[in-house]
Amino acid sequence: MIVVLLGPPGSGKGTQAKRLWTERKWPQLSTGDMLRSAIQKGTKLGIQAKSFMDQGLLVPDNVVVDLIAERIELPDCRPGFVLDGFPRNILQAGVLDRMLEVRNQPVDRAVVFEISDEELVRRLSGRRTCVECGAMYHVESAAPKKPQLCDHCGHSLIQREDDKPEVIQKRLIVYHQQTEPLVEFYKKQNKLRCLDAKKKASDVTEALSEALQ
Ligand code: AP5
Image (tube, rainbow, N blue to C red):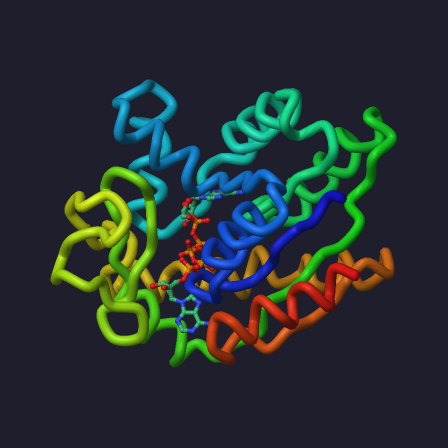
């Protein structure tokens, strides 16, 4: 099954994509994670992407399209995968459809995570991520057992550069202007399902499971 998780920054796409991997072994293809990994390794691509990400802007389409095109060719993606953070605009969605047409394996479902901007700001400003394993926490709603340390691997937790207040505002504007039109795009293809992302994570998991039936 090929699933697109759509929704604003902080709506819980990454949290749910990780659960789909744990429960169903569906690979999570997160362009944000791929770009952050390139930044950490100091690659040319990472250096190029960082300036856009730090400002809350989208990275150029050709960069993310190449990342996805390469990733979906790996054997673990053959049965299907979950796209988390891609496509991000109409151009990327069109390119994705054409890439998948060649494989004769179209997008099956696009699920949009619906939530207010106020709740997103609360979630993003409290998010902490493990430097080592990428596990995610929230200082209030999903706090680690020991402050600033990952429950799974014991490494430090950090705040993402783009989770600073002024960058969060920019990311929300970019989402509404460039990504939200994809809701209509997938609605027209009769592939869209909506879920209430304000609910607690386990309820969202349940709603997502229903949306994928
Ligand atoms: P990316 O990494 O994709 O960030 P995003 O879409 O902005 O999404 P987030 O990771 O911020 O949020 P999320 O929805 O995954 O929420 P999460 O589960 O973490 O992109 C970053 C940047 O990379 C972009 O700005 C852009 O520059 C670039 N980029 C990436 N893809 C691109 C593309 N295709 N084209 C161009 N540029 C691209 O949850 C957030 C917090 O809430 C966590 O603390 C979590 O614990 C908590 N939480 C989750 N669910 C719940 C719940 N139900 N209740 C309470 N708390 C919850």
